[in-house]
Length: 174
DNA sequence: GCCAACGTTGGC
DNA sequence: GCCAACGTTGGC
Image (cartoon, rainbow, N blue to C red; front, side, top):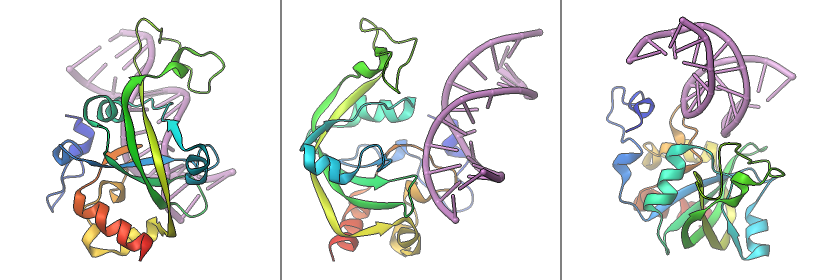
C-alpha cells in the first residue's frame, strides 16, 4: 500500500485508491495539448504510453481488463474537466517508448528484455455534450469521495466507483 | 532506513 | 508563472 495515500484519511473515512479495487471503472488523465478526447475519436484507438508512475502502472498492469470503462480527463489546461468516456480494448503490454531515446518518455534504465513500464489500449472515445469541469465535480455532494478531488492527488490513472462513473456520465450527457 | 534535495504534476 | 504537494534519488 502506498503510504502517501493514508495521509488523506483525516477525519471522515476516505477510501484509499487500493480500497476501490476491484473496479471496472477508471479515470485517466491526459493533457489535451498532448492527446485529447478529439484525438482519440479521430484515431479510433491509442496505446496509453508514457505512464511513469508505479502505482498508475500497477493499476494498468494488474487490474485493467478489456471492457472496463474510462472517464477521460483533461488536465493542465484552461478548464480541467472530464470531457468524455472511453473503453479498455487491450490489456497491458510493454511500453516501447521507455527504450526509445527519441521519446519524451525515455527511461534510461529500461531495456526491451527488461520492460519496466506498460501500456493498455484505449478506444471507443465518446465526447460529452458538456464537459464536467473540476469545479463542477467539487460542487457535487455525491462525488465528495472521488479520488480525483482529494488534496494533492496526482495519480494519472485512478479507480472510480460505478456510482461515481454513472453520476459523471449523467452530468456530461444530461 | 533516514531525509534533504531535486524533479514533476497540475490547479490556479 | 507560481507554488503546494507529491514521488524519486542518493548520500550517509
